[in-house]
Length: 316
Image: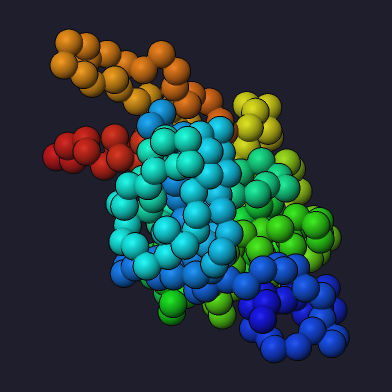
């Protein structure tokens, strides 16, 4: 029985568990077992296979099925019932190790409709925007669902994520990706709508946008956020950053605005060689984070200036 279906209520798309599909649209055709964090592998689970060159592969365990790659095939029946970290030998005598995928590994290998936000940036967004357990978060630009999953993990079962996406094909793929990794997510509401037409939620703790023109809805974001709430936007170019930051300051309710870029460099560590890797994940995007509050009369415009001012000795 398929576990993931979509139901349209107006233009809303919600994740539901259903036994029949009479009035609904199926978007994930295979049977999937709800993800588990530990224990032996079971049929229907999604697993991560890693070869000797550290290449990663995702596969869904179907009884009687096989995983095929350049090094031969591996029977899924040889994985079902085994523990994480089991080493497998393919039909061509290549070895693989099998694990459950981490979120970082999953988002890089899952099917994509839109470009995903890299794990290095996902972590920065969660920390910089202070996404906390129990938070109510509005996200716009669901894309393939990578950021949505990171937000869901951060808010926990007591929180709520409202995710809006203008393209239905992206929303459907994101819903399938989310369900494949997280199972049922009753605290996620996905909407197929154009947020540029207006922000229609109120009193949210955080707003996180992955949109090309976020400055168009700054006024709506300010109205939606509770006092002290955080706004975060992910943008690829400095021209977009400049337009957004200028708009935030002109709007007047975001006194603290920070722009950061995260660069990730791995290191090669071996017996006779310790050096940076030849390749690194450099620029992927800029993260702009602002906090809703009153205008600072001192003229301080950046958070680091506020910290510097606070550290200066009082005049006596």
